[in-house]
Length: 168
Image (cartoon, rainbow, N blue to C red; front, top):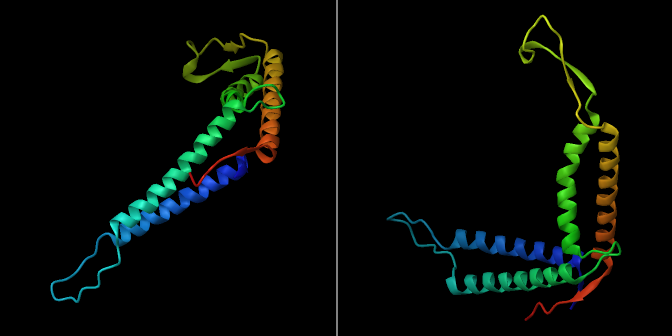
């Protein structure tokens, strides 16, 4: 069958939900409590059947995730890099942006007060040891790059199809 990345991810989530359902049903049905003088009311449970169903779901998830990994490592985005490289770069930039944001908002000169000043009778100031305008430019550049990557990923994930044989 042909799938987009978005469709494959939705299918994986549906399969994972099915697996959790089966595991919960197994947990509910695999044991029972019975008092000494109570009539038996044993829930229907077949270990082999549950195990086979869970294995089948796991197999489909494995096939889909492998197909997605191959797609991500071989598909080149319009911005010139593969999906897997784009995902790594975007994560790195998203981790970097908060630091740049804090640095670009810092004041050039800040008066220290309280216990941070060595002597209370002399005012001490903290100064930036970098150019906030340079940080601002880097922040804007990196934010634009994240947005470009995300738009490119969104477009490809919704339109590019790949073949996957989920029935094995």
